[in-house]
Amino acid sequence: MDSWFVTNSVQKWLKAVVSIGNTLIEMSGTQADIHLSSTYEHFFVIAVGKSLEWGEELNGMDGQKYREFCHYRDRLPEARLVRNMREHDVAYLKGDGRRQSEFVKELDVNGGSMSASVDGTSTIVCDEGYLIGGRLNVKEAVRSASEALQKI
Image (cartoon, rainbow, N blue to C red; front, side, top):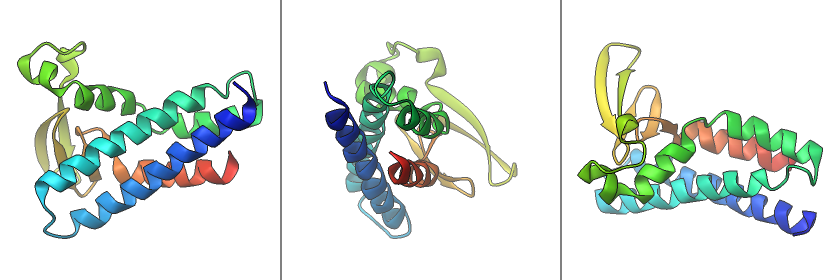
């Protein structure tokens, strides 16, 4: 693959993260259809996953762009895990997920005033943000993807 194609692919998926993420954030402030929100969440985690997959291809092609990608990637440490749990939800819900022991995330939310248990297929909207799988912060992903787009 050539550098142009890889860069274009990274940019395409980062733009998808921003677009779909902003739609999710908008929807969270309304009485949106839960099924529609869930569908958008699925497309969002796929877009994040594809941006991470294509970003890794910059390694060895363009050192500066790869470093910028790494700043984005490092801000989303559990994004791939959430993507995999969402993509393989049936297996995880049956107890057969590859990383089943990590399926449920225990969280302190709303500044520590509450505790929550969130599985990888669920979402919680709290003071800390719109957290898909209790781990992937939509607003943080959108912000990080927007920053990366300016530099890649």
